[in-house]
Length: 594
Image (cartoon, rainbow, N blue to C red; front, side, top):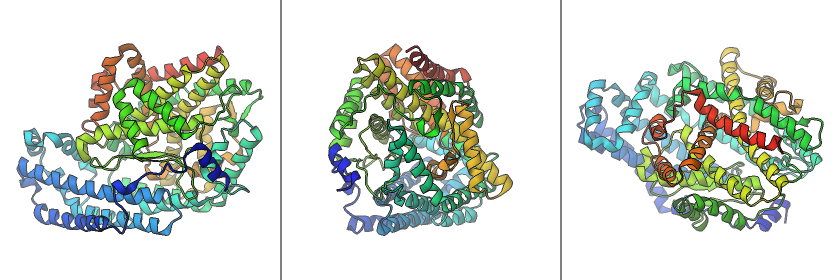
């Protein structure tokens, strides 16, 4: 039995494996094969029935078309979810990789048949579109159809759109799969450990263990830097070409349009957060003293304070902590979260070939979400489970809106997850009587907040340099990317943390930069939003809970501005973002005062 298997056994996670039978009994099952055939048949049938006719459709006919499109996309989503979930736990398995590629190609063929709809709908005149959308028959899809029209200025001709779709499965998605395979199959250090095991050691109390983990991670990443650098450059160039063809003015504009927020709103968020980097420097200077160190090095950032409880938390205890916290806020949330444990919607153990990190996949409204974590039994892992179950509960509630309207904009997608983390933090803090332990626990929470707010904004600044550099100077070397990384990270830490030269390669294992360019600011958006909302909860009590649940259940049925209207929030006002930053400042002052 190796170290990983022993840890899984001690924590009780060895059998915490998701049951994908709710999707399909297997890739060779009759249901899976039939659904693959149905997708292509229905895509062709829709195209033959409606192509060239969209502008002539009555409201009732348009409703019939959109309903069929939603049903087809939901079916494709079901197939894609199954293939993706199979692959994420076996990235080194050729059959799992081939299945995911097969479904990517199927989805792209269907998209090619259906691309006519969005193009034709967006060519409909503003007057005619308003008339159609005013009809009560289209009420369930009014926001969805209105939102599609925001892409009008960025659409290409149908033949061009079809070509881009045809190339997608061997383009962006294929490069992302390669990245997952490389990172998922890499082994670090003399003990040949996984990425998750090495990263976990960065939180170890022994400084030598942390240093060795950092060295192992650096050496592993450097061994693949030529491939990882090529992947980053290729996907940055792919985005550059797409943005140029679609006439997006800035590297972040497409992401902001998808998120249904203005460029100015995002700029306000980023500027406000980066304007308070002093909070980060204050904290890490303080932490050096608490650890008895003259100064911190990059591998010391997550070192636990001596008073921090270091117990290993088994899976059942984790379950109890999370469910008690959810239920204490809302029995409804607790009931939904319990389903993930009871019905095997979670994959928890550390396994060779399993993708690192954690996620909650919404799947489709007619099934249920699935959660993946790599559980190692730390307090931080309990927070991760709460975070992903927050996503999962959000996705269950929003599913009632249907496939199109349940898709929450990314800037609000972190709302439930961050709120869930905060609930668990408050519950755990209440159990600590020792002032030293409370202080250490607050420090750990501060570091989590810094990772969500300041680090994500710093990574947003790295992405800006990456994409603008690729566009202005051509292909970037690993050294140039490393310089961008060190620059943007050092701006955040100031003189409080020494970033060694080895640290310059650590940009290369972060998947968000590749799979969802521009995504990371959504974390900061969600954290600061939640800190402000949590304060309102403390002031309002039960009435807030009802409004909060309504927000989650609304999914993506309106724009973020419209969904937050009931909370009287102005996203373009720096003072709103400063409310959340003031909460962080308050926690830091509590630590500083001892």
